Image (tube, rainbow, N blue to C red; front, side, top):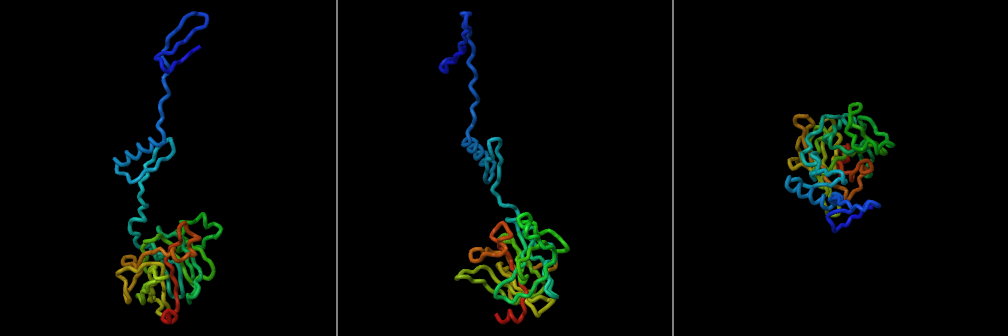
Length: 269
């Protein structure tokens, strides 16, 4: 029988019937394991030395350093989109106004209380039963245009993107007006009216964005790839609106909304 005394330096083994005691070294104690807290502290110290912004401890099998830096596309300017037709209204052709890599979803829908003319989408409609699977894939090319969804009469189109994303002119023309959108005394961006060169009898109205400081009434806007006019940036409207687009995205549904209205209707407002 073997007896181990934790206070002794040796273990005594007695061989029954032999009358002989054999002294053996005590068994080595099991290796000490660092607790989660010590692992986390060690990782944090290492991160501080290396200049890493933040860390995340992943399991006990290893530690991954995860810098708390936002994805590059949220930091760097998005730039102009790749020229791509997204809709038509008679002679007016609407180009995708946002860099394709920033688009969260594209949705055609009616807008109550306006005289928006029906738009003809260009691209491929998304099967509503597959919305969950294709979220984030609306920027793909099909039949010359992006993927899109439709709810009701397509008299307006929402092009979703994160707040701060650059918005470019969807048509060639000139700025007719820039009107602040005020809700309960708070300004939520601007409404920009553009007269298309292809049909002065209608007006393209863009909302859900902050007008570019260089934009003013009478400013010509262009969709030429080498001189594409930036008209503004996406603003957060979710504080006062519940955008229909939110049902198709993984965020609040911030977007630029485009409509084509008769010029007489816009002048009357």
